[in-house]
Image (tube, rainbow, N blue to C red; front, top):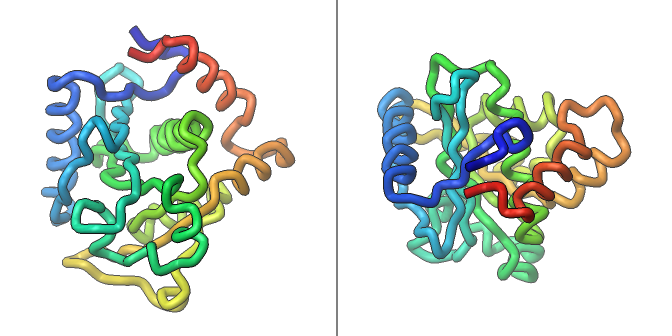
Length: 208
């Protein structure tokens, strides 16, 4: 089983875990009046589950290959393939979607677990860029609180897109820039040594 003292997330592997992932995500969709996109398959994506302090899974995140067609889960919000640096690195671009935490467990440190999961993915898959469409509140938390170098697409620089009753920012970022920041900023809320420890544990096969 996972070394939960070091690894703050669970990667979905079984049908039962995927069913739980979908249950959590769809529950939050109902709460926020989201419309859910399709799910990446195990072949194209990685699905993360995040637990509360009691070990109950209460959050999700999906990271999948960015394939700019109807199968992309973020293409509806913006065609990131129009960006030159995305085009040039298209084989190493990933999309982030289905990031959620059940309402009663927000502001309990799970967001940091999600950031560790994302940058563990970067270390393991050598991603060049990530693309996403994220809620404005989540955007501010990542940009201001954790200094993640999110970049809004140029034509959205001065405005945000509204879908139903919520606002989204189409964003992209280079994860290597954040790793460089962590290596040079001792006061960061994300610890680079802990991140490296998580990746080592994963490579040792301690996540199953």
